[in-house]
Image (cartoon, rainbow, N blue to C red; front, top):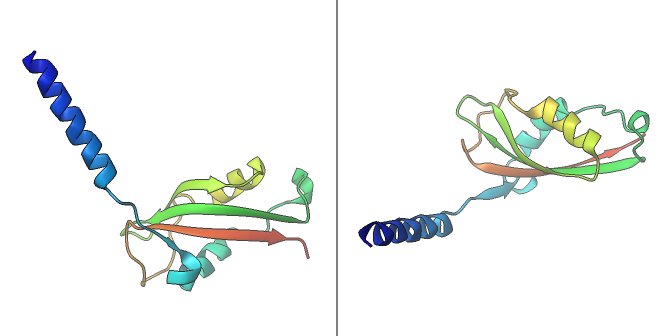
Length: 116
């Protein structure tokens, strides 16, 4: 009975911790345009037509930048598997040249790729 009570107390503590922790996310357009400019340099020229995509595709990305200026992609939303893979390979674990950002903060950015 004692182990059941201890287990229940631990479970309640874990649940309360999970729900009390807030994850902050900033839209890059609003908080730091320099981040988006650096990211745009890394994700240039996806092969849209060659991979059966239309003239315009978009992708939303959630990521963090650590103290060493390295990007960690957390999540992506796009209908295109190719675009997800392309952006992930171009951004994840890449270093960027930035000084004005909050380390280990979740950022969000949306890219729209258009054929010219």
